[in-house]
Amino acid sequence: MASARRRVVVIGATGSVGGSVLDICERFSDRFEVTAMAAKSNADSLLALSKKFGARYACLADPTSETAARFAEEGVELVSGLAGLAWLTEMPEADHVVFASSGTDAIVALQRALEADKDVSLANKESIVAAGPWVMPLVRRPDQLRPVDSEHNAIWQCLRSEPGAESRVSGITLTASGGPFREWTVDRMQNATPEDALAHPVWPMGPKITVDSASLMNKGIECIEAMRLFSQPHNRVGAVIHPKSLVHGFVAFKDASVKMIFSRPDMRLPAASALAWPDRLHLDGYEEFSTPPITDWRLDFQEIDAERFPCFGTAMEAGRLGGAYPPLLIGADEVAVEAFLGSRIPFLTISNIIELVLQSYSGSSPSSLEDALSLIGEGARLAREICLAIGG
Image (cartoon, rainbow, N blue to C red; front, side):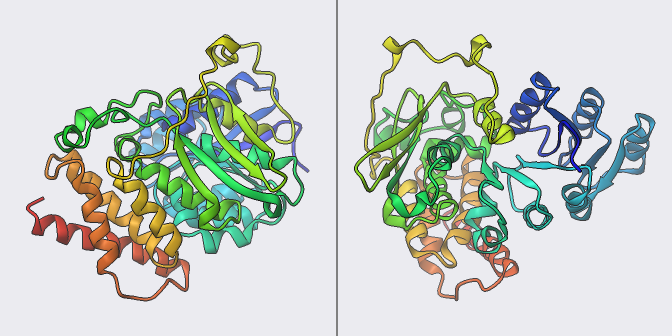
């Protein structure tokens, strides 16, 4: 039997999304108990958070014996590697598992959590974009899998009170801030520096995802994710630029009505909705979460310019094609962004490299999770070859 408080495991606890989740758990400690947390390598931060929240278990990718001893001295049992991560998600002391890390390392742990009938909050795009066919069938009940990214969480909230809503949807629209290059010309974007791309006007994020947001690749990847999360064909999912970032997503229904979710751009709000479902937490008493005054509701939207943001179109085409192309896209994008951040290629060359990778592939679609993960590696390999060929 579950305890009175929901026992939460946070994968990616030291990152920005993990921090948002932990903030909600701390504010509502009468509702949530953090029993375990995981990080890839930031042992000092993970230990400090484990002590702060009283977590009994923690996981690092490859801890030293000295690190394990430090955790043991604080009464925290440290496990390691992907096996340890999977063990955390299945343990009886877990009611709700939050996947707030990026990359593909946690996919097997996600599968195990779903199979163990845990509630799952998810802020990991790769799990669905690359491995959706081997993750989504494991969802056992409505709302077991709860998106935490603000856009997908908005769509989920629009749909969650509509039984069988997927069959009534005529369109899903995600929103994008437009990033730092929203008003830049193509010529100016060609000369953009990594520092320019990392100056995101709204969301504090890591370097890779911030560059993806600047190119709108991130929004294209999110559209693929939405196709799979909400069982929609590619032609019913799209995105628009919304500079104020107050509306996070729209759902249009077949009866010509539209629902949207409007809130301040703060990751703690979608995290709270996912953690507390089917309840809603009382956040309106906190000034930082308060709804902006109605006179500030600037609901301006812009179409995405394909010439200035070619990465968005490339991602949408990968979503239309399906099969091998989404995982290839993930791998190629990783390498292309790394090359840009290293000042080895211009900003707009990111899209050229990814397009060449997709065009050069002539193999088959993945038939297993292992195949899909291999295709991510293949996309990365092809992108490295192209970067070398063009001097990047």
